[in-house]
Image (cartoon, rainbow, N blue to C red; front, top):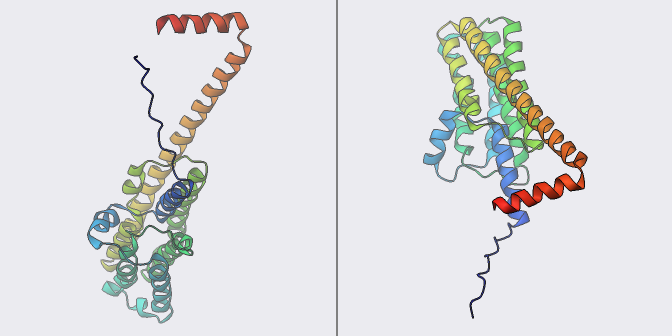
Length: 240
């Protein structure tokens, strides 16, 4: 007797494993690691716990600033950048599943913003330009958080094109050490503003069009008469 082959049932994903995967993906997206961090993550091994590293980096940068070490200017302005890079880059490969690992993105963003402001003020950069840069990066962070909570993930190329926290700090530190921070800030801010604004707007517009099309299709299906629906189903069955 010939029996009909049975389709193999696809394995049901473990809910706990799926939750952990999404949590890791979200926290990694919130970190906003750039190409340098991703390039080094595969060479660091398991990595260091993220919360202690980012917390110590933030406190160290605050301590250096309060101590007045940055007032000397010159190459010393690279010190906050070096502190954050050395303490935070080794945390990149971690899965961020610890109880307090959700603190990593806000601590990292605080370390980045405080470093930008401290270096900028010490180098005499315009305060309004520092504010605009912090605002642009902050908007990108907010947009990423809001999108991922709606299960709409930004494309990976945005994080690379946005340079990541590590390259942004490195560019600012080098510009300050060379005495050309203001033009560097102007170019960096303009570039990031155009990148994040255009990508965000186009993504949301594309999503709105897709939602509107889905709504129109659903409304059309509801308005179809039973005879039309039966005729369409019969036609599809004959094609199959």
